[in-house]
Image (cartoon, rainbow, N blue to C red):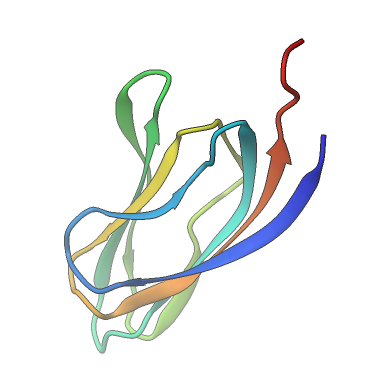
Length: 112
């Protein structure tokens, strides 16, 4: 299996639930961190969700009211995602939350 270390930036320009990463087919992803920056002058609610494609369900995995002008990591431990799983975020105030996710993509071996 090949391993690719990657990162992806995000900017939540809406208060709608927003996809920030989808695991490609034939891959597994280990998300190491989700750095979140609140650029708002007051507190801002931030929520992180995972859509588990194999269970056809979405689960909230992180929920915080961030202080003004603060930064946090949205994960307490690495998060393992399977092909098709989707990492999503939602915020109470648009255009105030941005950040970076760092992850490892592992190419799954094709079965013979």
